[in-house]
Image (cartoon, rainbow, N blue to C red):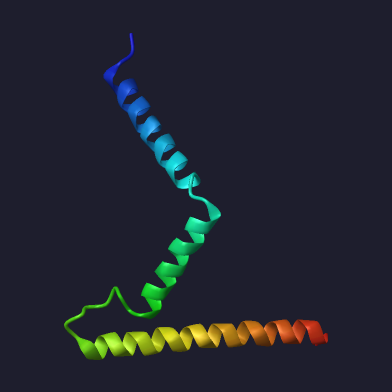
Length: 85
């Protein structure tokens, strides 16, 4: 006869498999929409304390500068590699 511990293990396994199935069902379009929203919220500092406007503005500036710098470095790297050193 199965012990209660095996039953708990089976329940946990089923829960994990159900979660994986739900996450893998996401189509490409919904994945891109979700990631676009996450990036917009990140750059807009949506996760920062709303009661401190200085922190919110500083976070926005820092994140946008970091994003621009990253894009600039990627473009420079592509240009460097295409040009041949």
